Structure formats: C-alpha cells, structure tokens
Length: 137
Image (cartoon, rainbow, N blue to C red; front, side, top):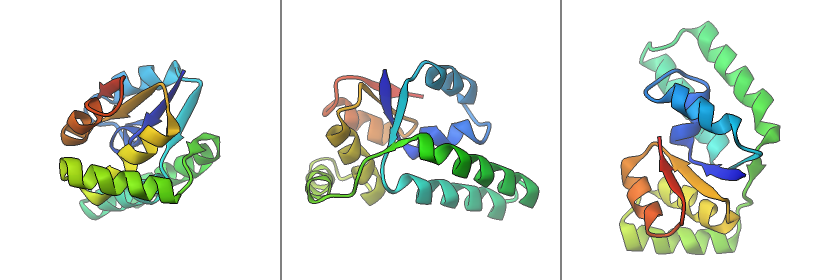
C-alpha cells in the first residue's frame, strides 16, 4: 500500500510529538510514501522553527536534518505541474485552504495514492471530501 503523507504527519517520523508512535506503526506497513514537491522545504522549516523556539538543540537539529536527507530519496515525489497548480487553485477556492495545504492536497489527488495521511484537522476535513481514504494522525 502507498500513502500520500502531508508534512504535518511526516514530521512525526523525525521529532517525537503527539501521535508519533501511532504514525511510526502506520508507516511501517507502507510500501511507498508519496510527498509533494514542497515537503522537503516544509520539513527544513519545521526543524528551523523547533530550533528557534529552543525545543531542540543544534545537535538535534543536525541529526534530524541528516535523517531527512537520508530518507528523502526513498520517497515518491509528485512533480510540480500545471495540473497540480490548477487543482491547488480549485482547492483554495473551494475550501479556503492555506497555500501549502492546497499544494499538499492537490498532490495527493494527482498521485492517486491509496490513502492521505495528515495531522492538520482543517486539511483533513477538506481531504475527506476529495479522497476516499483519509487518515488523521
């Protein structure tokens, strides 16, 4: 089984937070992880936010980023395309999503992954109207 994983959930793989253990069990059952072309940028920003907020140390930050860089080549990345942009614009207008959330959801739709995994409640509600299998973690 494959799954499109939103950055809000994928970050749980690298930093222990609410439902990280549940997420770890879920991804162990996957054959493929699909992500958006913005995911790597978002992951780096999430690490930076944790570092700036003093929730992690410099050493922890380097370790997390090294793990992300090591894992990333194994993810299937949806390519940026006109179809993705058009779908994202429709989703922005339909659900008033944030820009990056509309990109995430449009990539999930285009990828035709078996399920969509997110930890963003608002994105989850929009996704439930667009995708058959949505998992909120």
